[in-house]
Length: 44
Image (cartoon, rainbow, N blue to C red; front, side):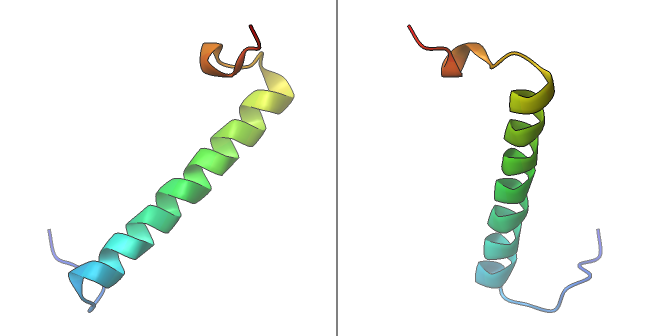
């Protein structure tokens, strides 16, 4: 796979982390609005 970004591994890692965080936030927002909460988030 050819890297599209010319950056250090640290920069690439930070970008990946940001992407994953954004993805998680979007998933959490969607699940709280349209679906019942996941078992991990249920109050016991």
